Picture 1 (cartoon, rainbow, N blue to C red):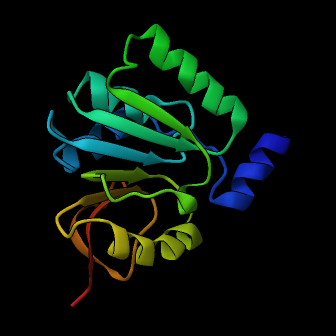
Picture 2: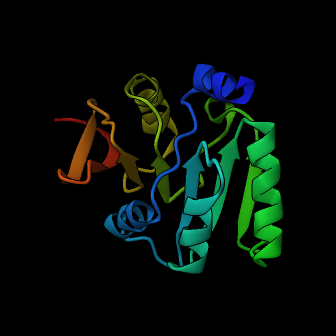
Length: 159
């Protein structure tokens, strides 16, 4: 319970994304072998594993919950993905996101809104941001899947 409350106070509670939705998010962002995918609040690592395993990308997860961080470390080791997946223990607000080609997140609306300026300052204009359920009102919407509530953005202001 403390773990859930801690992560919620720092960005979002842990609510796992279905594997099908993870695949749809990565496909919408057109993730490929030359991409570096960042997953903010990577939870149990399912998005990182899919990015590396299915899409051939390298991936970085940022997780503030020590138990999920440790779980991800074990998972990527067991799956042999240590060369392509890295987990950072910490707060994603304090991390440099500038190397990312793709950023995935399933946070909350208020956390997404707090992240918008960080994305515009740190990410290159053609980076892709894909969000599950929640939007980035100040950023340029590229594509959306309304039934699935998946949104793809570029980190540039709405015109």
